[in-house]
Amino acid sequence: MKNNIILLLWVSITMLLPSCKKDFSVWKSVNENWLAENKQYIDSLETATVKEGYEKASITPSGVQYIIRHKGFGAVPKRSSVVKVTYKNNLIDGSNAGVLADTITFPMNELIEGWQDILCSGEVRQGANLKVFIPWNLAYGEDGNQTVFPKRFFIPPYSTLISDIKLIEVYNNPPQ
Image 1 (cartoon, helix red, strand yellow):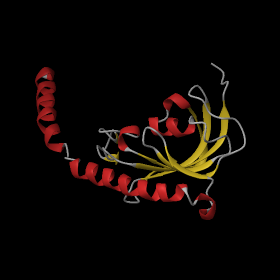
Image 2 (cartoon, rainbow, N blue to C red):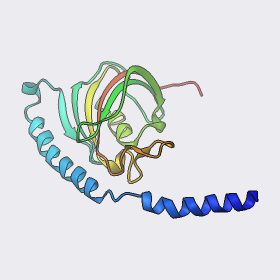
Image 3 (spheres, rainbow, N blue to C red):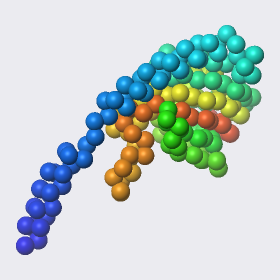
């Protein structure tokens, strides 16, 4: 009897899961178009950063767009660093994708690739304040970042992530 219930549950789940999967191709296209338009904005800031009150606006070779409000004054993060940050994440539609007003400490290798890309670029130091526009392939990718239960997307697949980051502290020689 127990095996029959497990088999019935497995069959039900495998039949229902494909019907729950959404098509995110339109969202992907909207995000890619938004990034292309935002690139023009970043390009315009590259020549007007002092006038706009920013220290730098640019794009990394991998495609992460960023505005540095303050470069910082301390240690430069490396891929082996541990960083303490505060951050706020939004999606292009303005919806909240995660806020942390209190500080949190992360090993650099546990951060999404887009954050690693800009934080380890040599452009920012401890104390930096920046706004980063991360393409979906350097954020949470084609899977997004979803909660386990209830099964709903917190960050949908193919989402551009807009992060306001304050780099509070950099530990370049963290204890192992």
